Image (cartoon, rainbow, N blue to C red; front, side, top):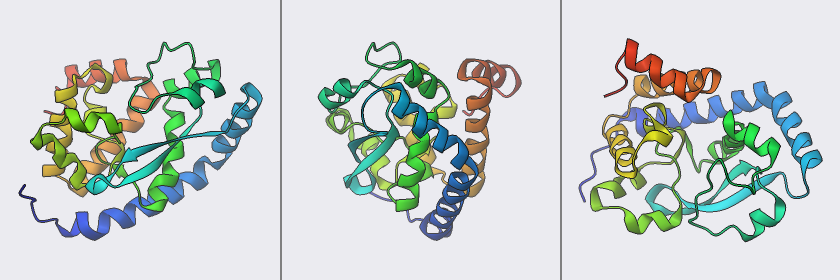
Length: 210
């Protein structure tokens, strides 16, 4: 499959910015991260972090980090490839709160520091999803998975599987500093005001990212 030549931003600048921004975020958010660690330990038995193998760039497997939001036994027996929904009874009360504000995903800042992930890119998919992808969708593995992405600021959970893939490939074809900046700003807005309100505001004022 043909791969477009990577520009200077994608080859060098993006990784430098990823590392610096992730490091800055960890430093600024360290009080919050420490509180989350303490609350998880007080809330239920089990490890602070949930780790799971995910395919990254060029389908190279890596361990993705999340703050644990489920009961310990549920984590132990969770099957790879089975997506957890928000109404799952195995999710703790604290876990629901962490998921609502995307705080559980902040552990992936350490994946970014390690170089497994980028701040912006297609979200790391479950391994079992690979066999569901058509050839054009496999281009998602041409880049590192991201903490947030174009699909996440254009409907996310309201999008169909193929719609998410279309946004992911559109991002890969148009990667730029300005696009990354726009996605980061929109992601912050979604976390602060909620996905429903953000999408309604986007539809009325901007018409969304088409």
